[in-house]
Every structure is written in structure tokens, then in C-alpha cells.
Length: 460
Ligand code: ADQ
Image 1 (cartoon, rainbow, N blue to C red):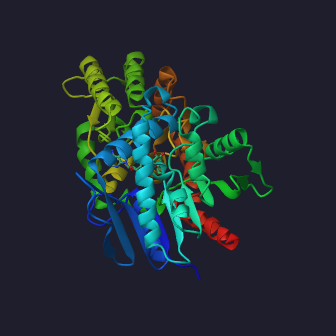
Image 2 (cartoon, rainbow, N blue to C red):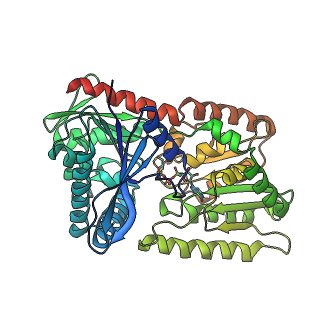
Image 3 (cartoon, rainbow, N blue to C red):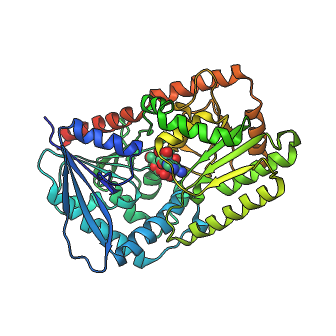
């Protein structure tokens, strides 16, 4: 009988915080199903000097274990190395990356401190599951402080091509860190292949018959586990009270016009300026649509402490203003751009109201919005998904209209195609997309990862 599950992620889903996303629910379920466990992460608080140890909040069967950051750690580890170096490089934006030795030292030191704290919370027979790019070195630090049980890692963002990953001055150090885990999960086959090729080319790693890799005198298994959503929950939510009332409120304003929707964190990886330009281009070139289509973009600001995010905000404000100034009329606004978040219930209602879902990131690990949009549709009258070929979700959702998000005129054409798509074709495409969304849902993701990780226990 395995012991508890121990999860580490930068932020947790500690009760009382507004973070009821699908991932939070999935991981809480995993802890509960296991009969209990620990969810470790940053408390969200920064202190002038580090004075407190881990604080535990027990909630039912889950112990939330929260540690603070000092202001310097927040600056160097979180804003600096994680979000000014790793995030841009892993999303192919070396041009936006800022490499600072000091930031890396802060990143390393937080991974070390958190790794030690987490090791102290573990018991023999536990299983450890670490999440995302904030904690690439945590496994190695846990091994160094004595944890020798099963330990898996899942990367939520893309793993870039080796030619891009090696632009990080500390790439070798990061790779060693990752290889301290027994199982390293990626979103897509492309990510898994990139990681494998990097290890082979850089360290002469050997690929074993069963796909595991022998490197740094140990064995690691890289494997693809595409993250999913909870389609039943989303379908229920999309016809619930909150969804219906949101759809009614917006429906009154847009009247009978077709709705095109985009929902993203405000992040330069999401291709928001290009998307607005494409919508503007569609209006330039199609007089017939002017006055008849409304584009709703919901994009709450994130990581406002990083310059690139402030620049993006200015760019979007300007673009939306310009397109509206060019085309708006007394009773019609082409772009409705809301820089705030909405509840899941409200979002599902808006997805269901929309004729077109525009999901056009320049690069994205998976993109759950694409899957949420599909799950929330009315099967009898579904909307059309336009999806970037650079979103991880495009590996599965081949029946969307796939686009190159950099190609403004192709995206503009695809919006026109989606708006005029006959009902039969919309239904056919949606049925195939929905099958894919249901085939690998959030439970599949969690269960297959944990099953694979349990198999490594026999190696101990
Ligand atoms: P994100 O970059 O945040 O996640 P995404 O997967 O699209 O990208 O969204 C995460 C969640 O946030 C979704 O559940 C979505 O509904 C919600 N959300 C987005 N915009 C919102 C808004 N305006 N208001 C309210 N909620 C909003 C990272 C990776 C992704 C990967 C996920 C999960 O970058 O590639 O799919 O982790 O692994």
C-alpha cells in the first residue's frame, strides 16, 4: 500500500484563495483519493527577511504546507529567473530573456531551501510529484537532503528545441536537476522528443529499449502526459445559472450578432496583439461583417512586475482603441476587451454563446482554454475552434481550424471561414474534437502520471 502523495508547485490551491481552476481540483482530488497528503508551495507572501518556517493548514485530508519568500527571493527567483529567463526561453522568446547570475543564484537557493523543507515533510513510502518550471532543481536538492523514494516532475510549459534551451547559461545544471527525478512528464510528444534529443546530443545519453534514458549515472523516464479538463463538469457548468445569466447579459448587448471569443492570461506567449490585428484585418477586408460580429477578449493582467508584460498591456490598449475608433458605430463595438478575470461558470456561458473560439498563442504548453471551449459547446449548435498550430493542444485537436498565429491574413481568413461554416460541418468537427477532449481528460492525465510514477518504486 503506497504512502501519501506529496505535491509541490509554486502556488497551491489553499482554501480561501480564488483559484478554483481545473488543475487545482485535479490535484486536490489526487491527494484525497490517496487518503491524504501534502501540498507544498509558496504562501504568496514576501517578507523583508525570512523569519518563518513552513506553516501547515490542515483541510480535510490535505495538509497545505506554505513557505514565504523574502523580497529579494521574490525578485530573483520568481520575477527574475523563472519569469524573465525560463518562461521566455521555453516559449522561444530568447529576445525577451534576461540572463542574470544573481537571479539564477536566487532561483537555486529557493529550490534548495524549499527542497529541504519538503524533504522534512516526507515519510518513507510517500510519493513526490513536483510541478513546473519554478522547481526544476528541487528534485536534486531533495535527493541531496536524503529523499530516496519515487519522485516525478511535470512541466506545464513547452520544452524547447535543444538549440533554444542551450541559450540558457545554466542549461546543463537545469538538465541535471531534471534528471534527478524518476519520471519527467511533458505536455506533447514534441516536448518529450526535444528533451530526449538534448540529453543525447549534450551528454551522450543512452536511450534504453523501454524509452528510459541512462544519463548522469542514473535512469530517468521522459514521457508525454497531455493535460486535459473535466468535460462533464464544464458541460454542466455551461448550462448552469451563472453561465446562463452571463450569456443573457452579453446576449442583450451584442443583440443577434455573432460572437468571437478569446480568453487568456495577459501574456506575450498568447499572441494577443496578432489576434487583434487579425480581427481588424478581417473587418478591413469584409465589409459585410462590419456591424455584425463582436469580438470579446478577456485577458486579466499577470506578472505585472515584469517589463515585457507592462509593454504588452500598453500595446493591447492601443490596438483595441484603434480598431474600435476605426469601425465602431453608435450601436456596435467591434472589440470588447476586458482586462479582468471571470469565474469558470461565467466563462463557460460565454464560450457556449460564442460562434468562434480564437485560441492563437504563439507558443503554449497545452492551452486548456481550447479544451474548455470545446467542452462547453451546445452539441446541436456548436461554435468553431480556431487553434494555433503552436499550442500543445493542436497535437490532439486536429479537427479545429489550425492556423499559424503569426500569419495575420491566414488568421483573418480563418475567422471568416469559421463565421460562415455550415451547421453540418460545425457539428462534425465539434463531435471529433469533443471525443479527443474526453479521451484524455484531467483524470486520465493525473492517473496515468501517478501509475507510471508508482512503477518506478520497484527500482528502489
Ligand atoms: P496558462 O498559461 O495559464 O497555463 P491555460 O492552459 O490556457 O494557460 O489556462 C489556464 C487556466 O486559466 C484555464 O483553466 C483558463 O480557464 C483560466 N483562465 C485563463 N484566462 C482566464 C480569464 N481571463 N479569466 C478566468 N480564467 C482564465 C499553463 C501553461 C499552459 C497549460 C497549463 C496547464 O502555460 O500551456 O495548458 O499551464 O498545464
